[in-house]
Image (tube, rainbow, N blue to C red; front, top):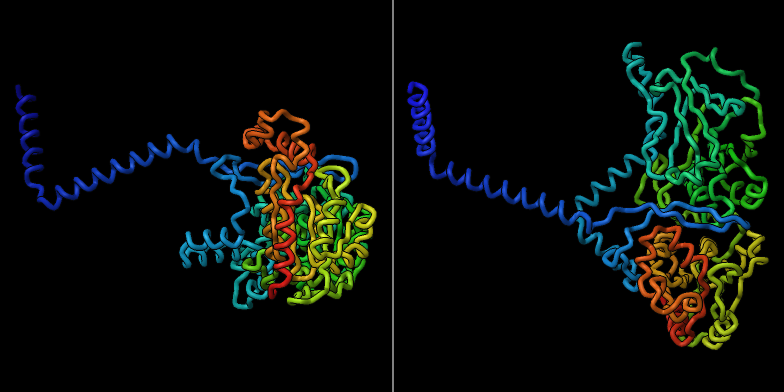
Length: 533
């Protein structure tokens, strides 16, 4: 009974408390209840519909290098109807849409964040010895101050920047150094593979792994065989090198970003080096460094430096982001293209505008493919192009083997056209204002054509046209029945994985252009050459 009486008293107190709430407090409770309900509904809907919003998938792209096939890992949107947008919408419109959906302050803040992440090690270390060895600092304070050495957080490339007493020992594949202010990793050393495609296991498997190991005392360092007076940059030419696109996207452009501010007062040390690679790009490498290249694999001497960078800076596929600030300032694809012009003594920096009534014929370069994605009606395309007023040059395999010679041919042209492939990498030699016509094979491959060549073309100040072939222009209609998913539902093929999709749409497909349809693209290219740059 006593317990029942106590509970009644407690209940009466709670009722009294509720009655004593003001209207304002009750309203607050009501709003809180509504907010809580909305939150629960939001969680429910996100849980239910999250399956409809696919994540970004890593796909692998097969590449021909010699007689072998390699798989390059690339990032692609989930292949769904909602995400596969044709490039008939211009890239300019795409960029405007993105900007309009993001407040100016937010975009500015985002850029600042990226700027701070990129190459912050080197900018920090340049001032570190000066700021962290102030005479006013105690020894304890000096020990507590540490310098970041390695950044393993970037999406495409790891790198380390070191200042101090540095020894590179090929026999142990280790970079030793002494700097009392450098951070010490938990394992005692960092591991790094200096190639700018770090999430691609197949590419990275051929890249030599190096250790970066700090030591406390110079007496523990291996003895110097040769001492160098300039900084050194250590990088690999393994991975997918041998494919022109990857030569530039994975090594040459990142090497430019990392080295050009040294004004040639820097030395290169190459791991997994190939003589043919150094010979092929020798003119370019000599524009970036006055010094002899060190062959890491075959030079067993201990090399000593005071500044060393291992790993290259990389922004994006086959291009440079001019908004990203490295410690040496901003860079752009225009600067890189200027380097190309200087390296290969190319005279045309900009196309000459064709004025109305002028009889000069613009030069059209047709990239001819001999193995995959062949253009079956090349001769008919040449005939049509000449009829429309073009002077036509056809690039075959023999012409492209000599890079210096082919660079001059490309530079003499006003328009470059071909079926999607690594040959478009040669656009780096075109004069600004030239026109690119990329023929995209059947099978919803517009996203790969955008990432690899459409956006880089825009960054290079080139004009861009794209021609998506129809099913009737594809050789796949000879291999599959008309109701096969390969023809009727390419997205379902992509959902089976990139290896399956690429095997069909990139490696079993040739193209026969509908010249009545393609004629309009050539006419548009001529119109673009009449416009001011």
